[in-house]
Length: 195
Image 1 (cartoon, helix red, strand yellow):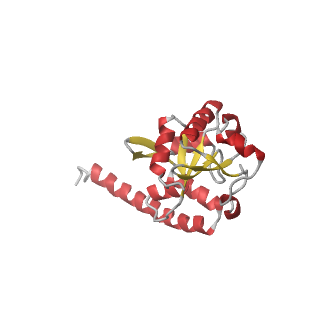
Image 2: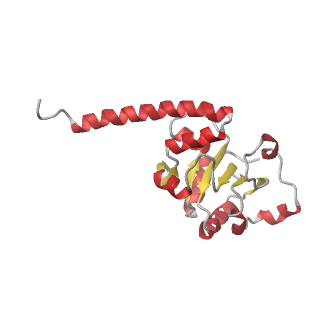
Image 3: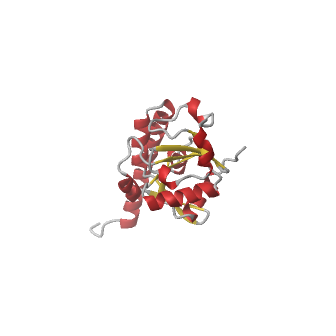
């Protein structure tokens, strides 16, 4: 049985210099959501070099495929049973070439379930998502976290009830962040000298 520890999982990616952005429930929580998740989701850049770094990180995480690579959305049925094919034996070592073929990969690691996505419905192209991403300090390292507006778009596109509930909360959080930034701008600028 694996122990859910997204911080340790993300630090392995950072140590292997994987180009990625945290998305999903972990990102929502970092943005202030009360949503509780049981897996770690990332959007990754799918160049050959980055897929090689990701494959090395996956090996260190003891990753194995939990359900088949799927161009669509995961279902409860395929998330909860291992992928049963002859190819599973070959997947003990994740081939970097395979990581560029599909959009979504579901892994089990020593730190819990881990979903790696090359594209996500509602998301702009990776380069734009990465450019707009913020960061969070985890274990002394800066970890890229999806921008709240991009996360909202992804959750809306997913359309599941739990995602739509999170959208409402993220919209409220965004409003609070904007109000706080506005108050901070007034405090920094101070009263005008004309008064």
